[in-house]
Length: 293
Image (cartoon, rainbow, N blue to C red; front, side, top):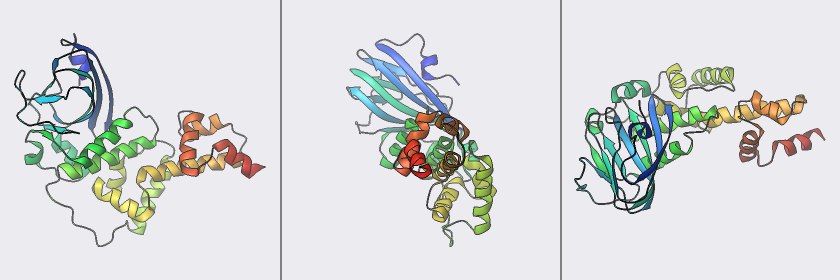
């Protein structure tokens, strides 16, 4: 699937540059686009062969306007943090009278396949009807959080993004509310099975769909039940387990911090140090020194 930057070559008039970062979670392609302009610009936003949900993350200059047809103004007035939902087969254009920078996040997906993957049916009516310039703070925030980690290669980001997408579509496209469980958390055997599996896969990536399928729950239901049982989200549990393994290495081996970081799935000692400090409030070197004397 071509990105917007690949599709719009050569660039439209007054468009100086388009950069795209792409990542996939739960079969959903997430594109974060940054478009720089030098004056009035109207461009096709591409990806029209897929169902798309987009969020305007940042705009510098005059407001951005979604258009169903080139040259035809949007009939809906401006709203901050705007979202747009477009069914497959319907093109969408973007226009601004004087923009300098526009950042947006676009999720492309197949509703039927996504519903099966999430373990919850998605409304064909809800996702098959175009919606321009609508506002939903929860949806916008979930998309912003996805955009912030689209280029983060840390293994725990897989579970983090899976959880965000599950929450997003539970909000957007569920045909029915899941019946609340009389037992909020997972059964002991379910929790043990899931934790044993996660431990066996450390420090590698684990997908939320795998965990939910092990106990026959939708991803959204599983995430809620897991947090009720453990007090943390699945990605947080995995990150903490990696850090606990790192602590054990620092206490029982002479491994350098670079070696500890590599063994526990961090890109380097810097990334390891930042994650360690967020959780423990101190640096790995100081923590090790205080305990080894």
